[in-house]
Image (cartoon, one colour):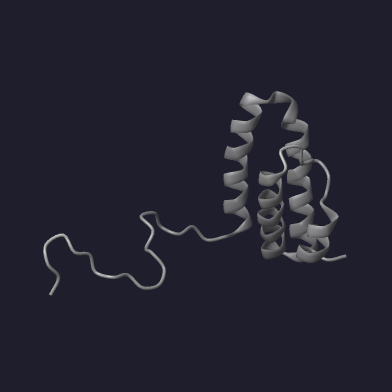
Length: 102
């Protein structure tokens, strides 16, 4: 029995308030378009870089499938979040070779 104000200990993952969205290329594309719209509204000169990035992700998907493309995106964004001057218009070869392959 728990007393007043006591919380039951939780084990494992916390349940999210939001439903999980399947990780598909279509869902990624929807999210990226929203992201791109927000960035381009504030920084119009970055549009060309983001369109090039989208092309890289499409290429990754065509070469190695949805999972590889989404994996590259996840790893690239993680790196770009630490490096403000990251070039979105250039493929990050170290990440590409691991996520997508030759």
